[in-house]
Length: 171
Length: 276
Image 1: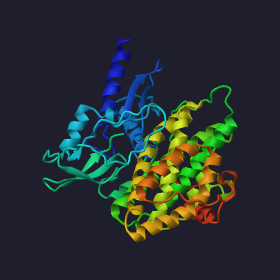
Image 2: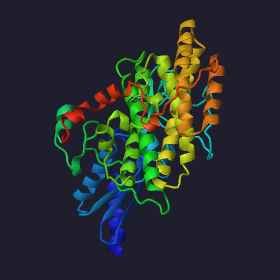
Image 3: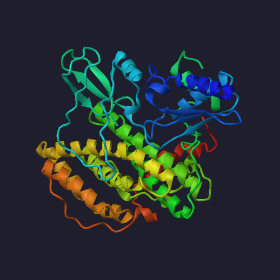
């Protein structure tokens, strides 16, 4: 029993350290896509991963990364499970992940809108979101594009220091 | 893995321990490790047909959106349309995988995407219409996203847990697509005389295909409410044109689908066993 607990802790620690392929300053744990790590009675390590977006092309890379790290650490049997429910939300990015994003010039997401079940209303009024410039901290910023180099980000610019920056979309 | 040159690294062989992504065939199953059992009492054939049709809608529109790459009016819009296409492609992959698990054939996502002919596709015809100009494309995206969003919102409580999970995830993405498209329709409708006229042309050309969406899944009220809201803000009229008979869901397509598929499927068909 003691061995199993130690194994779980060690496996979890290893899986948590795997970097995200597209935001390599974050670990999969920072990004909130590593949902759980367990050890089956037969010793198989099971890591649960969830995609950020349905089309996230990095999922296969993440799966391979976690499996390779665990095997390298001596775990002979590794299984990666895809978990779709509940869907990923940017709220799962950890405080540590948010700090690292800002440190690398990417503005961390605001809190995702609370959506009650049922029809999603369409709101055409100008979006009021305060996004702080990750370089100078100014709140005088504006969105320049709703989409950016990866599904999870939008493009913004700072009106104070004039620098463009990426913002992780809140979903 | 070599980091010397990005293309050399990508071109290296891969197996389970070093999967590469973003190109080629032979992707891992996107539902890898998901519990694939069909709940007792559920009509598996009907579930598979639903997944296939919704997957076809997404794949075909994703291909149209990808056609904008290198030709969009602004780089930002190109990135936006490509990202939206990528979301839809991801939804298609999940839905095809679910169809393959439930229709009794065990087919992979590649089999559905690359090795079926136009008559076997079940997408609504709105998705396959050529892109036209930017006005035409953003109007189509608005109507498609609004319809699919309302549909997925209902499917999020579908009796099949896998389809429900795919839908619940898609809801967030589709709400974002609808927002992007709605803002462009307002901007163009309420823009210059030229952009207004182009939106009018797009409305007249597309409205005959709307009825088919509601026949496939009736969320008419939700879609028309979105449209009324956007068209009002854009200063555009609700078009009054008769629906065009026919159903892409029944395999009846316009002449535009076959050339789209020919391009989409050409590499996979020329090298059917290839993985790279």
